[in-house]
Image 1: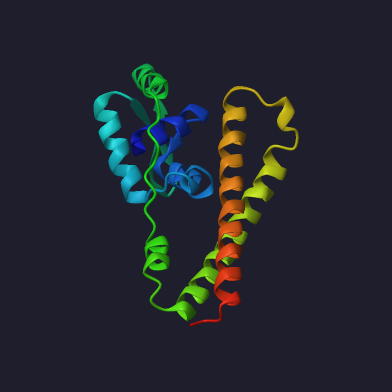
Image 2: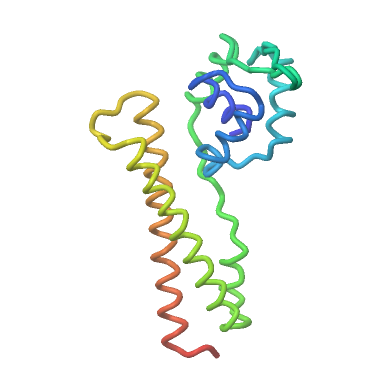
Length: 179
């Protein structure tokens, strides 16, 4: 997947400025496909050249004009084409797993694992709060709302698995002492 497609998905929800898109990424899509503000603006310009998005200028009092982007018919066709393609399995790249494999410093691994577990727990709490706020009745969801909830569920399950793995590592390392 390219950032282009993540932006198109976001624009199917509603038109947005580059700044608004960056904020949406920070609050949702970015959990699964992170992007900096600079990347988003660069891709928006390329997508506009390709005809996938169009922009309109909105005048603002005392501030620079605001450029708002919307998906075009060509952009929707590209999103449909991309969505119909099979998804390749993402490669797992993990410095942490390589450090485990090396097993050079058990104390450092314990500290790293505890920090990772805390980060997983924090993200899990964010995901669960989002689920409770935006999807109180998942059985009533359809279409894009169902897809958004299912993606969020993937994040929830992934964080729970991350916590379980960290717990397993901690049990193994603490049970053997920090040698």
